[in-house]
Image 1 (spheres, one colour):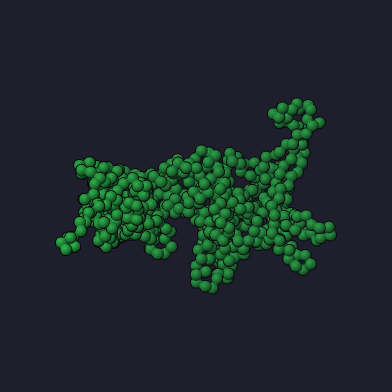
Image 2: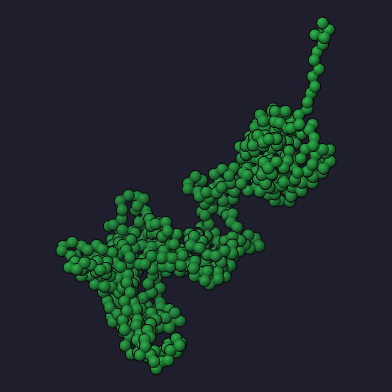
Length: 574
């Protein structure tokens, strides 16, 4: 009877493995491999002190605790806690923890561990699910994540830490906008080509870098593509502000940057989320602040505006073409206006190359350079020139198929006629102002809608500025003599071969139709412009003068000199 009443003896077998269900164990269980995590969000002097103090404190603390072994000190310096993406040491710590190299992580507070609620909870839960689990102890809040009651408090305090980060971000954004409203830009001039920062923060032009910027704009408005300009800069050994090789997108960035014209537009980019810190293009979500004539320009406003007009003219083209910039052959948007059987041809023109034998140049001057005896060779010289021809007449056709009777046009004739037209328009505008023919035709063709009318007016006014910017002297400083514009009674002199302004063509000409000797150009501001003299041959330019790159003037007395291209000599065995 006494044996039945005796209570059984219970022997407690202590746990040998850590478990999340056992509650916080950082104070009771030994031995423990403990790691510490430290972080400061800025690189100023006060934060540097805090950063060093945190590392020293945790090293001494872990070493002084009996049963604790230092598993590593992980520290991120001048890194925000709102995202894990750039916290290299934090990610290294998580990797080591998942690899079973530590039992606990000690950190100063939740805000030091992370300022993103999702990151905090995801990392803590990921560590708790390990076998054995890895705990995180937050000293300031006295929270052990292996304690079952700790997650609720951790969730609340993590949300508060995240909201504190949001409040800090709002304050910083507010202060930046106040600077923008006062016209104070935030630009790192060390990463911008062409300018240096002065002793008082002023923008000072860097002469060597500014020469590269001007080269980019001058080549682009002359018709070169962004890819071609990048290749030329790389071949010359030039680099970007960051010391990298040039690419087409870097050239386009220079061309679109209004700061090279002396203006400054602020808040082009905005940070949508304080958690990601990712900057995106401001497409109207926030105001922009534009300051005109903020600093000394590197390029003139006319050159800059012309580059923008060229870029805008290619907005509807393919992505690859947009990346390359201009670069398209002019006159490729012309259509044949010849009629066949009562129907217009309407086929595009195609650029081709023609060559002719050059009489009187039969000697082989380069034979010795090629390792051939001159006595054993005879030579023939050729000169080349580009032409434009209707696609129907240029391609091979089936036997009996109709051929377009349109004439082949010299490219130099198309260029000269286009420039003569521009000079005629400028003379009429300077003589009659708003009563000139161009202004009257613009008023007649002006769109009805207010928005389209404003866009057309802006394009038209810019076209007039480009006309005023046309050179009035040749490279030798002599006044230009334009065919058909000589005043009555003026002394007889040779006409000039006019330098072709490819930028004006690309910026304003949408297309055109060739009707014999006349080309009718359609413009972006709604007026059709007419240029004549397009069917001229090489001999029609004899007697004209052309300015050379060395600022001398050459009188054209032979057809091959019209294009200014070098003669190619072909050697053959005698």
